[in-house]
Image 1 (cartoon, rainbow, N blue to C red):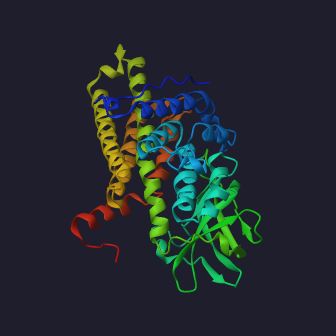
Image 2 (image 1 turned 45 degrees about the horizontal axis):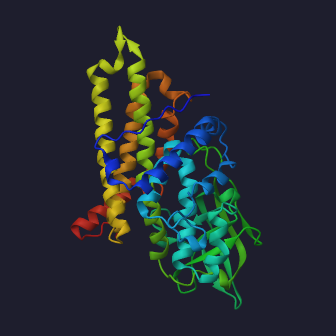
Image 3 (image 1 turned 120 degrees about the vertical axis):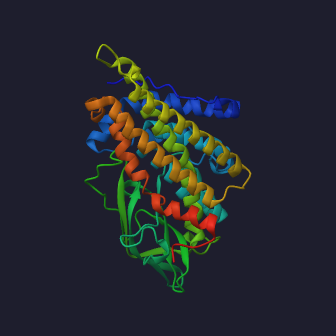
Length: 392
């Protein structure tokens, strides 16, 4: 079993920008990841199994709904705290961060923001405690980057809605107790509903054969004339702004999480470069290896500054969707490039489970696509700076 010797890089002394509470939260999650995640994550990935026993621990460290008010079971923390938690979880594994990110930003956030008081009291405490896990149903087999084209629909039947359709690529789906599902009503308006496991006609087949996010459970949501009580409709939002609001929160967390994966790859590569000897000296003494490492720490530092500033803006309710898109796109691409360069430094050992590099690399191939693809986020930035919509 490999020892977790991770040491976080802080080249620009960014800890000075954090409060004592921020650092306590981050260090608590970092210690938990070292103790509970690192020893088992490689085996879980190799077996393509979600480590369900970690769910309780995720709840205990406050990873579920950290910014949700305490009265609903959340942590009542700020957005930088949320980001730091996501950073440390993804340092452990992107799939683990996905579980917490979905629970927080895609399930608890819409229930808190768009739901009724009754819905908040019913669902949020159980989600915060980890008693229940949730999932988020937006992407469809034929509608990914264009969610407005969804065909999943609801029909008003008086005292309930009848839901039909299907969603795919849904994290947590195979074992989630509830799903926040987006569907079009009879007027073509997108609405959100809370669908509970056990409702007749609702099934969640698991997706198999993944080469990425292997320690995370992915599945489909299938709705065959599912009767959903009217009280399960999210009353306080209509239209695409509902799911997009959730995605903005998730993308913010991903922009921090990707830094964690990048830091893990950099730390492993730096240590390996000092220990691995060729031609009579450590490979870290050769110019090409130093170039790789110098560029890695430069890009990580730039990403850290980007997310810190974004966190400040988000705490002040001034962060725009386009700013969040920029950070998500930049940081995930940065992490993926660092994983690839770190694999080069590790040589053949980089493809083995003795080091985390290949696992991070394959995970990041999913992260660069989900919650808005690399190209879509580029067009969001393009539209923001030019005022021209390239989507239509």
